[in-house]
Length: 162
Image 1: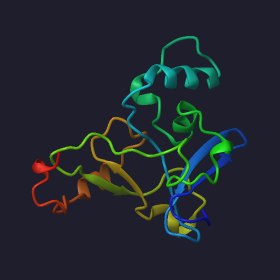
Image 2: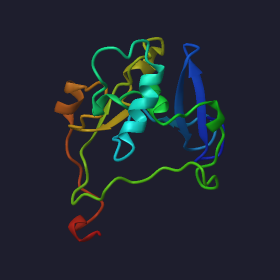
Image 3: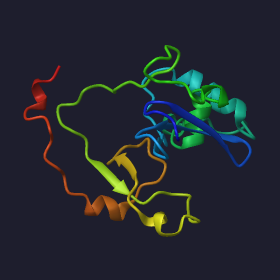
Image 4: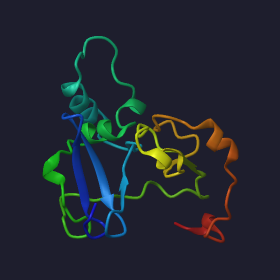
């Protein structure tokens, strides 16, 4: 969190779950990666998640359940404390990628964060962002989605982007 932008910050919560953050603007600023849409490696992710579940008897994890929470994301990608303080710009073993290009910008919803009821006035600040309609999000904020107003895209004609 207090590292140069682009540095990973991995920490343990509840003594057993890892969370992955990317330092963003220097002192005290980072972005918690809460979910992702897996595009490949789903069976490996399923095996990693199942190996850490209390009971693997019963139903199999659905694709949308593989990475739909910060600790689930870390489990599915085998992220642990060994990833802490890695530099995304210099470490060839870890990186972030863009998903497939779309012809239009996705609708990004700004909502209150979840699971931080102890944070006082910061509990309701719209500091949680997700793509509207994404099945990969763990908790949807219907009120924030209704208040969402599409913004003009920065790309004048995104359909020409290849």
